[in-house]
Image (cartoon, helix red, strand yellow):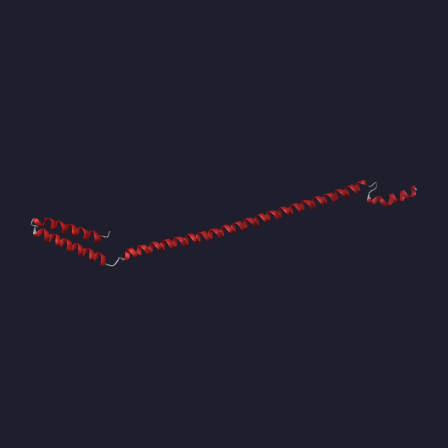
Length: 149
């Protein structure tokens, strides 16, 4: 129920009460005061209804929309940037792990090569030790072996 309807209902109640009391003389001053009051209420309500809305209400609503828009934009921007930074961090970590794996592979290959070199050296030493005569003395040993035949 709007304010105008409530006022109209009250006005009818006041007028109805005046009619009920028709048997009694109603004071002219009271009737005039009520009439003036009713007219001032009607004038005030008409003025309140006909006046334009203030810009403060429109600005307040618009400023909240603007603030919410900016907040949403900021959230989206922060989310995008943090997602990009997370992807970059993950890429760097993958590259670091791959580099560590390559380094471990290279070190393993170097150890295997060193082991092979050591085995070759030991084989050469074994062949040198297993000879009866050193290389420098071999021609003399051959001459001696030929003479013994």
